[in-house]
Length: 91
Image 1 (cartoon, rainbow, N blue to C red):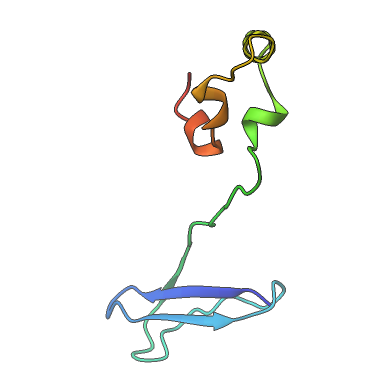
Image 2 (image 1 turned 30 degrees about the vertical axis):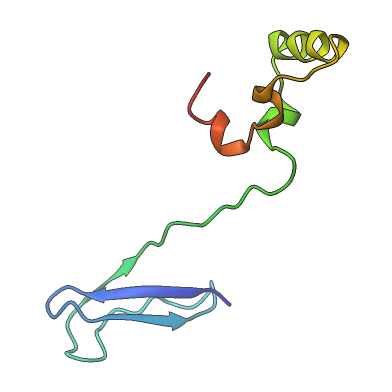
C-alpha cells in the first residue's frame, strides 16, 4: 500500500499514513484537529544500464559518426563516456 504525506495548515505538523488507494484522504490533523493538505513527493527515477537514450534513440548523424570511428580503429571518447544524464542537456 502507498504512503501518503500530510501537513497541517495551521500548526505545520507533518505526518505520513499508509493508506489504500481507495481510502478517503485524511482531513484533520491528529495533533490539533485543523484541516490538512496532502503533500506530493517527487518520484525518484534511476536509469541503469549501458545508456537509456543514447543506445535506444540514436540520431542518424550519431550512427554514421560511430560507424566511421569504428572503421578507423579508434572510438571517440565521446561515445564511450556517454551516459543517460549527459544526453538530457541537449546536444
